[in-house]
Image 1 (tube, rainbow, N blue to C red):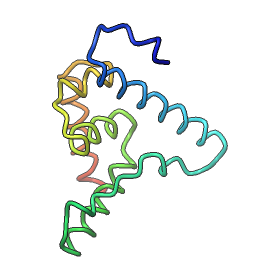
Image 2: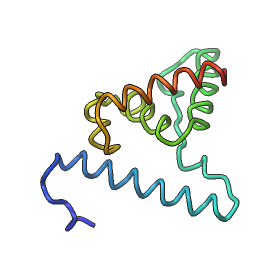
Image 3: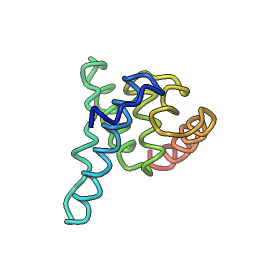
Length: 115
């Protein structure tokens, strides 16, 4: 896989993209076998929220994020869990910065409905 890096983007962006594609492939394979793919998208925000109530609310939020459509979930995880800019997330997701912003906007609307 390393030989496929052509230098047109930052190495870290390329690595995130490869990782994201690998996770998606695993999720698709897992779902075809009828198993729970959510384990691959595990996010544990507990270390950031010391209060029990805040921790419970954060867990509920991240569980809802895991139920988002793929593009929305990826955008939210890259922006909020990984701390990337919309431009950086766009490089990794293979879309424009504005598209990432739209996915985040749609995710927020979806999350309001889920929560």
